[in-house]
Image (cartoon, rainbow over all chains, first blue to last red):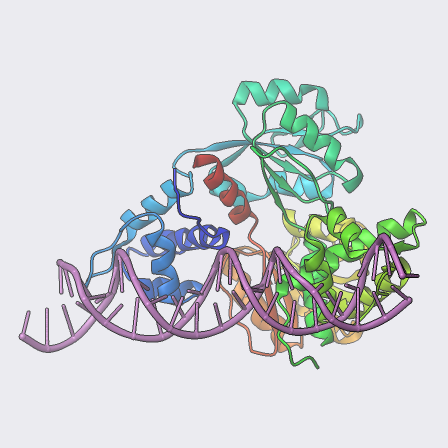
Length: 207
Length: 207
DNA sequence: TAGATTGTTAATCGATTAACAATC
DNA sequence: TAGATTGTTAATCGATTAACAATC
């Protein structure tokens, strides 16, 4: 769709802007500016305008931006104008927490299924969702037309699980296992390593 | 200590290299090269050498790197040569999961205390740790000489909690609340917004 | 010596910022 | 019109990569 290369950091900031706009909207504020948004989220106003410029012109010179309109535009850009069914693999501590985590639900992500290899866990409930065996993966992905999945399994199983997900049609994977994973070119992969984040902090404290 | 500016991305990669080196070591491999590490973790070999060059010369030209030595050097650079006591604020779903999460423990992070405002939670156990009231925060930080803390509370409380942590001497904060927080210059702050990561994926799927 | 791999420099690439014309 | 703020261009900054001398 877009020819110009859009920095991933811009996308992440758009997501942050959208939260700020929701907040402004809740407070009944109708108009805002790149400077106000910038201050609110901790970036430069030029950055805000540049991030938006990748996608169009959403403001009025001399006036600013309409809060509701801009919010709506950004949600549309991010593909958040409708809900996303997701699957979650791994019902350990992290998996269970992610399943119960409100932050995903608030942004329109709906958990279509939670899966675990462990027979003892299968059939148990996490909140209102039943933990399913991996054998049900294909069925759930097809039934709910799931395109995204979260991997919260031990590192040693991660690649195997990802292969299965890809096989059954998952196109975007959010991985918490601290292991380099390989996926086909048409599958998006995003890794967050929680311990690495703490280690950046220990480095800074050690300087 | 260092005059040259070191990219934060380099620090994060060092952490990833150290995991790979631990893996090589476990397999009994004695010597490695920038090329091997690069392939193992998915970056370029020039990148590996550059990241290491910020901190010294750890290899032998024509030969490569000693796995154990390099591993040890990187852990030292990251400040991981001894354990770090940490506190965790918020014993909700996410907080509980982080408390039980093995990944932190494996890398030498020890939870010195878990805190929650909710009277019903206080006294309950998370694994082997008792949830404490916020009133105990100062005492625990002092007793265990804690410098790092994780924030896993609702966004609306995050700034207030962070202020308390800073007041009692915390110098590095890992924040999961999706809200811009302000801390003094001598306090390191790191944010990870889980929903933002999913939203980068929805964006890519929507293109 | 020939082959291999490091450490480092210079070139390239990409992202952020400053500045300003456009325009409400 | 005067003041304000956008959208966009050009300048700056910083990180990655390519290339190669050093050297085992």
